[in-house]
Length: 439
Image: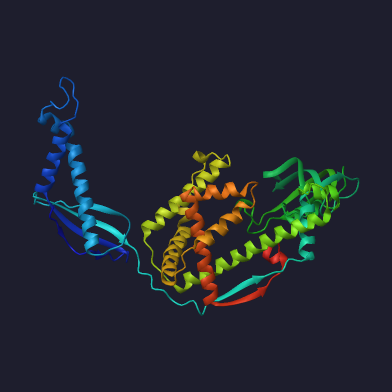
């Protein structure tokens, strides 16, 4: 089939958008339509006729539009494919076909509008500064972790004294704005842990010092940036009645505590060793995550890139769909909780950019994943299961899962390459900084 093709031209608004004008002779398309109808006629069924004996005129009348649509669709698809191969264009996403209306009925004229992948020219990362966190897990880090585990197992015991920070209290309260109770300003039997930060500090200060059976009135002013905009900056009055005060009780670090952490015989030394091993793993993961974040940002900063909008849109929609599945798995009613792909546009653009840059870095520097790397990552994942060998076999029987592990290995190779070629220095960090506990 012959067709006239004009060279792809860039569009002004989008530097990656191209347009190809094409024209196909209708004689070729009409021949294809006729062949399709003849093929249908051999098997089509109609009331009153045996299969294959339906008059061609009736077949054409019934199925002509379908045959024409299919013939034109295939002709356009082939013409477009031939044109982009001839011009050696890397098409991103799907083309938008725009029919042209003209007086020449002997030709089918149309334009294909599409985006192409950008050329990614690799730049040096030598001037990028990267700080690799460094933290050795010692006894102090184990003690801090044990303290966190104790806090998670806090129980409360009723006491007959004034409430202080750390206590759990049950209160009734009524808040008024200009003498009227405002929305959300009243509650009964309301539990709150003082010092936990759930309530405004001024409110907690008004509650602290009260014993069960006591009450107090006080005023406070909501912050100017308060999340409930109609209350921001407003002065209100509160009346509070204390119902009960409960003091926190932390469990002692004993055999029962160790057993609660899965140490069957309650041995404290073994408990500390398991905590140490888990901490070493967690610290390693967080250091890798910090390094990866900086390495990816270094690649983005050194490779300014315009990316196809179609790919960004596809990625944003994929992220939105993943969010919908996650919400549904958590029991949310997603029909009443719409998730808009536009929310993910910025993150999707970052992902697409990194994907294009990383692909070029991997190709240029031979950073493909090696079989032993993939196996090491799978073994690491499998160790948390009772039958690791079964998990390993499962991974190798699932091509999609194996591809994800391979992508992870490639990503690690890229991070290592960036760290090796950038101005990377080790920086000692505290346990709280690394674990996100710093004030």
